[in-house]
Each structure stands twice: as C-alpha cells, then as structure tokens.
Length: 242
Image (cartoon, rainbow, N blue to C red):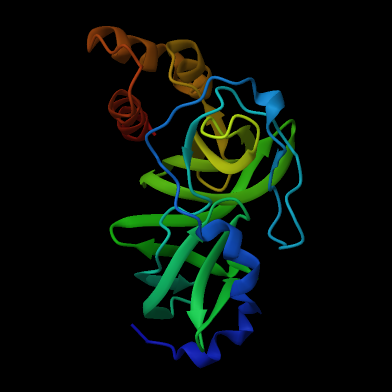
C-alpha cells in the first residue's frame, strides 16, 4: 500500500492553532462520578468548528469526569483514505468535544476537514470511522469506534459535555470539567447507524427483520443483554442469518 507524505495532506485537512485547545489540556481525574441533572451542563459540541460548542442534546446519566480527548497525548496511528492510499505513522488524537480527529503537521495541531474522504482511522488497535447516524428523526454524522466489523457493525459513540461545578475545596469558586458518556449504535450496510440500548426490547427492535430468530437466540443462550459482550454475540448471530 502506498504511503503518502504528510505534506500532501492539505488536500484533506485544515490547520488550527494549538492555542485554541489549551483549555482541553488540563488533566482531569477520571475516577469521579457525578449525580447532577443533565440540565446543569452548558452544552455538547456538536460541530467540527472551533468557535465554541453548540448545545444539541442533553444525555442521562451525566457521566464520568474526564477529558475532552480520547487520549490527552498524540499517538502513532494509521489513516486509510477512500482511494485505498495509506498514511502511516501519523500522530493522531481524537478530540471528542469538538468532534475532530487531529494530527500534528509542522509542529501545529491540524484536523481532518473532510473525514468522509477517509475509510478509517486507526489508533493503537482501535478503528474509527466517520459515518451517518439517526439523530432525533434526522440524519447527522459523527466519529464512531468500530467494535464489530461485518455487514451489521457495532459502533461506539463517545460524547463529552462541558460542565461547571463548585470547587468543594474553596466552597464558592467554579471549576470547569469535561464529562464523558457514550452510546452504542448498529449500522447495517450503507444505512445510517441506529442507536441501540442494552436491553432485550431495544435489541429485538433493531433486528426486526429477524426478530423471532434473535429473540429465540437470546432466550436459548440465557443472555441478559446488559453487557457489550452479549450485544456482540447477538450481532454475530444476526450476521450469520443475513
């Protein structure tokens, strides 16, 4: 496979100053959970611009305190373009809050401006795609991690909500945090991805074309449908039926 020079990536990317991301470089404690209602946070960034976050949805539960990035540091990655050209040893970082896959170019932080022209991104052993999904009865697009790759894919969508809380140490000063949460999606062929919940009803509805077979498989194998592993077993079974 052909290795492309990073200098040619201007066809697919645009540059941003690293100063814009300075707020997101603050280290967070990933172990603290929160119980505040979702109405407390200021919003989720739902676009790829750097002009600020757009409040598009309020998710429950609030989630776990973390970072605006999947990993705060850039990591070696691989990019497969739609023409099957490969960019290897690219320093990648997924900015979940701004919905951007970022990379280093000439010591600056850059981001993919046309992610739909990329087949997939690989960071360590994790594969990410940018694809359409159903959102509030309309079609949007976002980055998803591929957990199962077949005709019916299992996708994992991460989200970050910007949140202000009172600093318990001072008693009055507010501190800024990023709160992480996630959702599962299934994507059949070229159809937009559909959100799926970890319960039997949601899963059977997602596979209504094979609902009886899927329901029987869940019952026979005594699956509680409360874990990712159970969900993968059902999707693998569905793919065999298809």
